Amino acid sequence: MKTRVIRTAVMMLVMMALFAAVFSYAVVDGEYYDTREEAAVALRDAMKHREKYVTVAIYEKVDEESIKTIIGDVFAMALEHTGKPKEGDYLKYQFAEYKGKAETDLHWGSPVVIIRYVIDYYTDKEQEKLTNEKVKEIIKTLDLKGKSDYRKIRAIHDYLCDNIDYDVEKSGDHKGGTEHTAYGALVEGEAVCQGYALSMYRLLLEAGVDCRIVDGEGTETNGLSSPHSWNIVSIGGVYFYVDTTWDDSSGSMDYFLRNRDDFETDHVISEEYGEAFVTEEYPVSQSGFPVDYDTPVKAIRKASKSLIKAFDSLEAA
Image: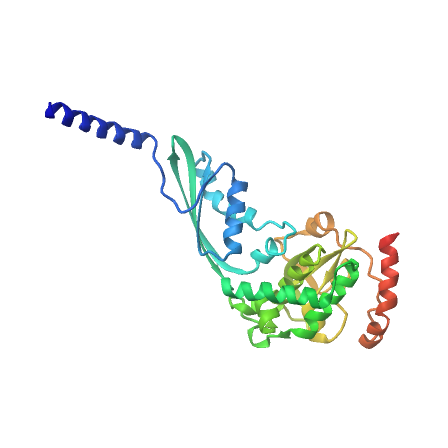
């Protein structure tokens, strides 16, 4: 009788081993997703929480060529512009680098791709918490509720120019730290162009105005060109260029709500964006905003109320 019981137990163990071999269960930190898009949403959420190690698994059968590109494809989807202040460009420009590894497996008989990411950020969770608190404080102080797009853009532009110091010592350091972030700009009060652009992006989206970050090269009056970042902002569905960094550095309004012809004489967009970005996806105005750029700054500020009224009437038309 004992022999039969032992044999039965052995047979059960053999069957369990065979079952496990056919329906292998990949042990991963993340969950299993039906599509790349769903996996990208999970990755995006993890990045918002500044998680360094992120694993996602996707129910998908891939060939040798596809597995080479899926790591970058999912990561790019996670960084797409959503219009939400803590996503899109806010994530894209606040991580230093990432590495990814993909492998195939079976999950209960279905093919899966497992992607493991290692991500390094310019800020940590605590710094982002402080940034969030500062953003709420700024939005409350500026009292933007119910104001037009122009009023919101102008108020945030002026706030950044008045409260951030350009970090000259870090201007050539493209692998630096918080000076490249909204935390550096808003909490520490020092930043390079990327920190200015990120702050503009974050605050405008919090205020309900669409905004993107653009990078490329800026050519200064001395003829020297260097990597640079700025914004495009929306007024009534039409986009304008804004370079808060250069306005702050020059103490002017020369780069506030500029049109394509004027702005692109000394700002060249990187190939990553291309011509279609500012002509079709986010059409930047061919005509200038109703501001006399040769007028002294003080005169512009005095005339701001009439300019606001004039543009508000255009918005309403």
